Length: 372
Length: 162
Image (cartoon, rainbow over all chains, first blue to last red; front, side, top):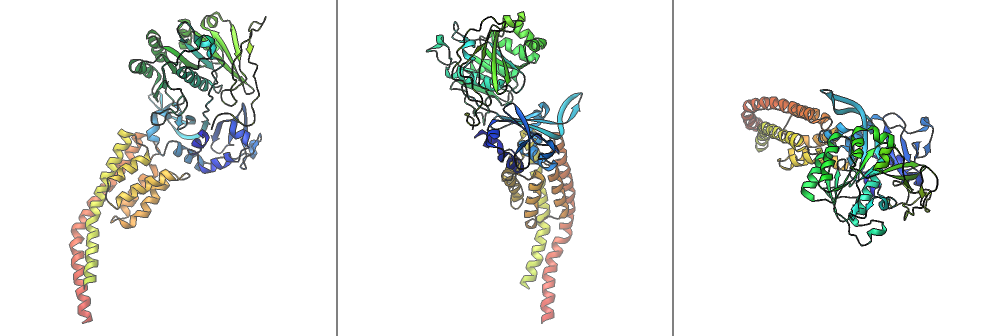
């Protein structure tokens, strides 16, 4: 369904090649990389391959189909709805989000004005990132971030490098909180909480005409395409949220707005780019936020061979430089594998980084998943 | 006699209609400019909105271009615009100069940022205004002449036949 929506934005010639891809590749596809006069590449289930004109995957770049200038221009015109002037802001940040929440990154020649990027021109590189909905992928994480005394969740920061499923997890945490799907023994009988989402890139909710197209539960309000710092304040003032979900924080103004949220008694779930604790602490804004104790829990995501590992670390442990007290490994990749029904943490013994594994760890199947 | 008179009047009507249509086109481009600069409306909707308030046959140029943009997958905005202009052009009273201004505008529609788009639209408007002045001049000179010529030419044919 979502993939069909994406195809509406792509030129026929490209859709034709993608349609001929083998079924498992098509279903696990995460990125389509179109580069003018260079081989077409697809990324699926942590692997990447070039694509031949017949739709077969290959590692040989010379056998691959090469999109020409006409196709790239047609693609650009389609994703901007023939109106570059209407997406100037997006061009400045280097990506466009189309309906269905799919994000298309752009590379070209930057046009500067007073030293800062005004827009891109001669766009010849596209990275189509396919948005996936994984209802339930937050299940292994929820028990660790629930705050039983306050009957809500702790301030949580989800951290990982790009492409590990941060946004997918954030979306499902928002859904779980708003639907009251707490997955915690003490939370039996709790209702859901009001959730506000500041969706700067239209990726979390993929709103169409203001209505989310992803399932965010029944108690969720979305500020679509709104700058984070401003959106946080707007939500707090106008929508009385109990939990706020926000993607990719890292700028100083984000930190100021998050502090306001904290003092307004709102719980925050946010994501940030970093590959580990050291990276996190080397980013001044994030370091400050963790040091001030704003985020009580950090969830580190890492993906190896189609599996996502959730490592849950408290703020104190992050600051002490200890890599983690409790870790939960889930066998399910938020993006491309079915969810694990429940996390059953078991004590790991002796190791410096004890780790609990769910017993339902599975490899990615060739077919299936709940995406459309 | 009647046929000759009608031909003369039809020709005169073309002379009379041309400046009016050019003026209307200029107004339409002004509206397009507003849609682009303030509304930031995507091109298909902007063209449909501008076309919606125009009279025939100009209305058809904008609406057809908008429809083509919404339907087609492979083509560019330029191709859609050119096709629409070419299809509707024979029904208008306008000449090659105006057509060239429109086609040149089509080549840049939607392909650049706001400031640049406005420049292109304004350039087309200046071009059309010059054509409008020339068209009014021609109308003044030739409108009456065409009518008279039609009647007189027809009379001449009748006299010769008699």
